[in-house]
Structures are given as C-alpha cells and as structure tokens.
Amino acid sequence: MQRSTILWADDEIDLLKPHILFLKEKGYDVTGVNSGADAVECIQEKPFDLVFLDENMPGLTGLETLTEIKNLRPTIPVVMITKSEEEHIMEEAIGAKIADYLIKPINPNQILLSIKKLLDNRRLVEEKTNSAYQRDFRQLGMQLGDRMSATEWADVYKKLVRWELDIDGTENKSMADVITMQKDEANTSFARFIEDDYEGWVNKEDKNKPLLSHEIFRERVFPLMKQSTGPVYFVLIDNLRFDQWKILEPHIAEYFTVDQEETYYSILPTTTAYARNAIFAGMLPAEIQKRYPNLWVNDDDDEGKNLHEPEFLEINFQQNRVTDKFSYHKITNLDAGKELVRKLPNLHQNKLNVVVYNFVDMLSHARTDMAMIRELAADESAYRSLTRSWFLHSPLFELLRGISERKGRLVITTDHGTIRVKRPVKIVGDRNTNTNLRYKHGKNLGFDEREVYTVRKPERLALPKANVSTAYAFALGDQFFAYPNNYNYYVSHYRDTFQHGGVSLEEMIIPFITLSPKG
Image (cartoon, rainbow, N blue to C red):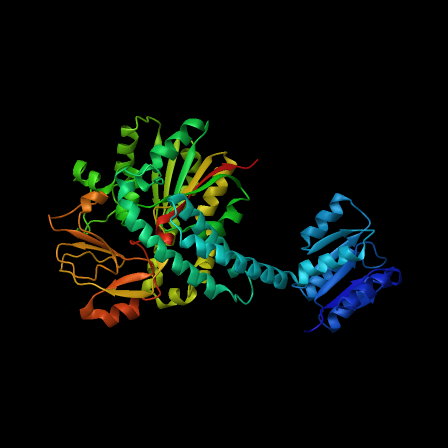
C-alpha cells in the first residue's frame, strides 16, 4: 500500500524530530520545513496528502500560509497547530476551512489520531461498518424468522435503514448486496405479517395495532396543537421514505431539535387517493365513500384523486371539536413554494398550517417516464442523493428555516413510501381495472393468488367496492403487475422504477417526526 505523504511546517521543526520519527515508523512519509514560504514552495513542487501548519511562524504566518496553500491546492487537508487558545485565531482558522486544530504542547498520539481521522477515516469506518453489520446480520436473520409485533417490525426496518445508509457511506460498498438481500428477505416475512394482521388493525381487533393513517390527526396533531403555545406546522412530503428522512435530518437539525422520531403504518393501498385522504379526513376509505360520496373519487374517475383535502381537513376538525384556525397549502412547483415562503408571516397567525409538498412523488414518477432522471437516480443511493440535493435548494428548506426563526413547532411526515420494483407478476383485468402497478381492484381479475395479497371482502379492510364481486390484489415486496398481452413492454418499461400502492416495509412504515425550533 502506498505510504501517505505529510508536510510539516514549523519554525522549530528540529525540536519535532521525535514526532516525525514516530510517524515514519507508523508508515507515513514526513517532510519538515521551518517556514511558511518553504511550505508553499513544497506544495507547488509536489502534492501532499496532509499538511501540519504552525500558526505562529516568522515571515508568513500560519494563517497567511494556509491561504496560500488553499489557493494552490484547495482540497488538501490542513491541521493548524498553535500555542494560542485565543478565540479569534480559532475562528479565522476554522473560517479558512482547516481540517483540524491542535493546541501545543502536542504528543505523538494526538498527531497520529488527527492523521487517522483525516487520512484513514474512510478505511477505518468501512472496516468497522462492515464488521459490525456482519455481526448484526445473523441477529437480524433470526429476528426475521420470529413472530414480531408491528412495533418490532418498525424497529427492524429502522435498523435495516441505518445499516443501508452506513454501508452506502463506505467507499467500496462491499456489503451493499448483502444488505439488499436481507431487506428482500425482510419484505418477504413482512408481507406474511401484513396478510395475517392487517385486517385486525383496521377493525380494531388487535390491541397491539400500530398507529394508522386515519388516526394521525386525532392521536398526534390535535394533542400537539393543544400543548403548543404557538403555531404548529404540519409538513407532509409526499412519498418520503424513512431513509430519505434520515438523509435530510442533519440539515433540518441545524434549525430544529427532534422531539420525537416515530413511525406509523400507512393504510392500504399505499397511494395518495387512499392513504392521504384518510390522513386528512380522519376516516378509512370505505367510511369516506359512504358518508361523503360527493368528495370520494373512485380510481376509474377522471377527476384528480386528492382535490378535496381542505374539505376533509375541515371535516376532521369538526369531528374532533377543534375550533382553532388553520390553513392548507399544496405545493407542486417552484413558484408556489416561493410564494408560500413570502406568506409565512401571515401563516404564523394560524394555530395549524398544513403544507403538502409533492416534489418527491413527482421525482419518483419522473424517474419512471424520463430516461435522464432514471440515469440521475440509477439506484437507491442516487435516489436519496437527488432528494437531498432538491431539498437543500428548495423553497421548502427556506420555509423550514423561517418557521424555526419564528419559533413554530414542526411536524414532518408523509402519506406513504415507495419501493424499487423488480419482479413482474402477471394479472388480467377488464377495461375498468385501475392502472396502478402495485395494486389492482375489479370484478374480473385474473392472477395467481399464491403470489399476491388477495382481498375478496374489501369491506373487511374498510375499502370501497364498486360491486358485490369486487376484489383487491396487492403486490408484495418488489413485485409489480404486468398484463400478459403487453408483458414485455411492461417489464422493460417499469422494472427498476419506484412505485407505491402495495405491501412493503418501504411503503408502509413511514416517518412521523415532531420538532421544536432551536434557540
């Protein structure tokens, strides 16, 4: 393995020979110079992996040398070493993007720790991550074979997400295929769990049932409004999976403290028309259709499926006898997002402000239909990265910063997640069958019941039915439905796309985050 090269600039470099010899014995090539000018000259002549820089040198000072080095080689990590603990010197050095800061007198182990942190960090993290996951792999595998509760399944999913993100952060991702395989195994077991338990949840026959979509406002949002002295902002980012929340969290945490990070279960089907309407109405789909037929839109209707959310929200307030003032905003483009930011001072007068942000959902659909987006988000890692990039440059991030400044409470959640589909399942339906790739319903569906979650009595799942013989079929894990008469087209066009509507950990176990402003 190639030895790392280090440049050390200090006007008392001769006194540091024991330190330099120590580092050479540890496998590092160290070049010592006694002035800032010599350090700059060395940097011009050849590249170094790391620079140690004394802050107080005659001629070019450490800070001046730092500026010169960064002009020549902006990416090289520089460690500032100083006798001074004055705050302004530290701030100047940090502002100039130093990699580390050490106070004299220094010992060899301090130096070695700084080097390992800056040069060997990736390798050490990778080795630790891979070995730790290998230890956890067996335990997770045993859990998947056990009978678990909804809470335990949520914990397993969060653990799998953590390992996926940790492994994604390593350089060679040697364990990526293993975690993918284990997630697939988990989804297979989870599908059986949902088939066995979901009906009991919907009908409140299971005392250990999890929190479901239609209970969110009654159980979480309304109580939060009561205990909060100021306004509450309920931000629903459509299609936001738990892993996507975790990659956004560090940026949001600059402005908010996470009070509670929990998950809830989306109802089936895991789509906007069902899950999101259930959230705002505080009712399950069959009840909405029965009580408010003028507001419920069937799958085969041309009308948009989420046009009545403000009306549903008003109904939910009335049913729970909540009289507080609220607002509702749906953001589907950049201009609408910017306009909402401008309206923030007025929003603060309301007790609750609901914001629905549709970008992530649009991203997943665009990835299906546009080759360029599919290339940009070629896999799970790239999909998460694209989500992060959008968020950091979006009006939504600006809105959240504004909410924090105005001391508003914040809820971040979603209506359902999404899964990358890989396995086609053949299905036959008539012209009235809905178009969703993850669930189908109709009176003449043809499929292998052993492959999917079949619901012959939709009323037992509180699902609307158009006629007596209506049945529902839900895709499991990474399946997607394809018609036999156009099978090759469906498979080639939709394989490896992100879809929702069916049964998977990614679609059903979703984040519900409560936050308080910092400062």
